[in-house]
Amino acid sequence: MCFALKASSPAPSLSHPMRRGTVAAVAVPAPGRPVVRTIAAAAVMSLEPAVTVPAPALAARPAAGKRGLSVAEAMSGVRANGKTAFIPYITAGDPDLATTAEALRLLDSLGANVIELGLPCSNPSADGPVIQASAARALAAGATTDAVLSMLKEVTPELSCPVVIFSYFNPIVRRGTGSFAAAAKEAGVKGIIIPDLPYDEMHAFRKEAIKNKLELILLTTPATPSERMKEITRASEGFVYLVSVVGVTGARATINPCVKNLLQEIRQQVTDKAVAVGFGISTSEHVNQIAEWGADGVIIGSAMVKQLGEANSPREGLKRLDVYARSLKNALP
Image (tube, rainbow, N blue to C red; front, top):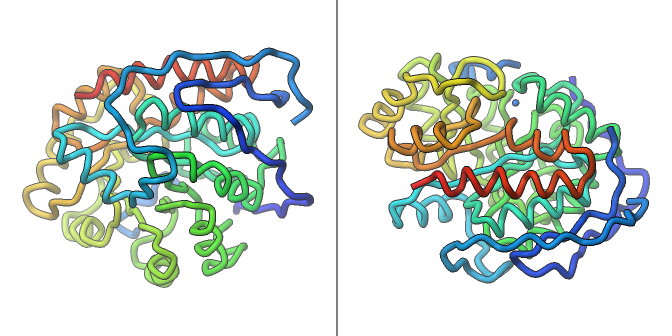
């Protein structure tokens, strides 16, 4: 069971004078996705100086805070240009919320089309060891639902890509579904993914999501029966999340070859919505292969989280994230 802790004091301001293309060192100390239910059922200031990282050569992007695109609009724009969406995932609060804010700015500047932000939970049962450890570090550092949303409220106006929250259902229930959805909207969140919310039980929350203009992105897996997969893909908003494996998150050596057939089945028989593939993706070869198979987006989670959470300092983590995210973005057609 996941527990959402209440913030005992207001979150510190995370406003930052950084301009796009520059990453500043984070002034904070470093503290130390059930298996997706077959969806069939379903800062002491740092003394280190700021580090300037050259901006990548990317196509012109709308000015920060002026686009306000929904997830569906962002994905449609990528498809219209014959590209594959780059969708990185990071855990909020690992190693701390100030670093998360800088990482969001960085990923946006590198050309992320959508960013998934994991809300830390004490029992992230769809996640493998990397993201489980990341969530534990974030909770130990004091990341709460309120603090995460407060940080997002300050940062999202600066971003040109939509942010999607990845959260287990219990923290949402404990906050109150209506209250959570309203707070997420106020924080500038555009969509939400709830991996442990069965399809048959999602309709009540869906009403709150619609009321607050949050796109509820649903997951389907290789084990999802065909008829249920059709229901899920038709109901999913923003994009369809195709889980590449039956299991938890985490890097794999190869991509499940059945993903190619599933992409074709969804595209030919079910829906023309965008389909993004996630779980187990970690290398340039993986993202290139999935793009060749026809996915509209590629989601990279655990391998992205490692760059920040396992670095010796926030400053080093941001540098590692820059290099890694850039390499995967550049591998996409």
